[in-house]
Image (tube, rainbow, N blue to C red):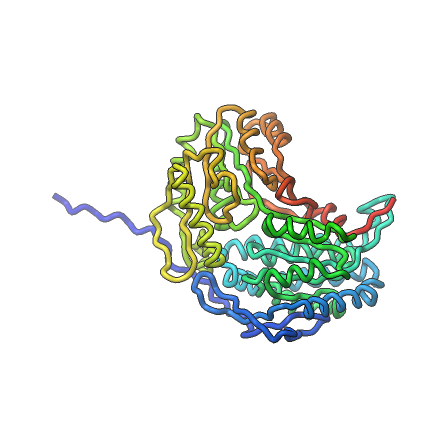
Length: 485
């Protein structure tokens, strides 16, 4: 008998990103155009979640540091920046966008090292989209009267901005670009676990020649963010993060005249109808929850599949999950990177245990995980009850909860049965059914036959406990302006 041939090995050879980047051993605050040591002399470490290795030490901001940053921002607003024409402001913002393009590879690598997301996502999505936001809003800087016709347009003053760890550089761009285009000055606090690209952006801003104090970056944890929110000389607060913290911020500014925008948690519904292009929809599911480790507030973490195509969808989804490569985020072949922190990994694991306890059926592909770092395999639950904790609460990890439905009214009711209302997706071949569902979903953003697609010209934001206010597009400009008729 001839010897049976062994099956070929289709695994990819390693393709690690080898471009060197410069990360300083220690970073101070960026206040008034200068690197300023923390008043309390305290620093904390930021680490690579894929390896556990320390990347740098970062200043821990105190109330005194925040006060210094706000004073520098106020001086710039009352000085050169506040008196500058929109045309001149636009030139600076254009310059920032071009410098981001020139240093895109450096930013992408640092984003991946500090946050754990695959280099493909940082390189192909986060950094280019951040540059596009600066380009887009640079074009509006001298056209505010046309953006809001028949209204008197004035800037707010000093904006305090607090951004999350899941899209550190992109969130900074979402907030900085419209604030600068409308003539405001900024005090920005990045997340304590992913501060490095914001600090690199400070270097770029200095290179762009912005007047001192226009953009100030103070690093730290929750107390630092609270000091920014509660500072009496901050005119506008913009926050992206958890719903729990967003509620606290809302209470803090309720008795003040500060303007507020909140982009909070989500539990997005991804709906597949029987007439959908199944292969395309399965790829959209994977893109919506696994390629980003579920680390987006708009992740499609709830999947609703019409009953008569459920078996086909699940078979194809599981086979697709089997092909996903989990590992080194700097490897260009990697699909699923590292979980941002040990604390977040424990949270995800707690939800997975809760899903099993609730009686849901779990599937994880048989993939080997690296020994060091924070890792969670792609996970899907079927037979999920509507009341299950994994169907109701935001997990912020690569965990998908699947439910079935028979009719369109049923899936609309199920999709809306959540405290959140940030985003959703619908997959169907019929335009009428698409509009029937999208007009009845309680979500700020609804994608049709795609998922997780963003554009600087389109507003983004949610309803209910997903916050209020919009970022992106003309709506993003209005959030940083006083508008009077």
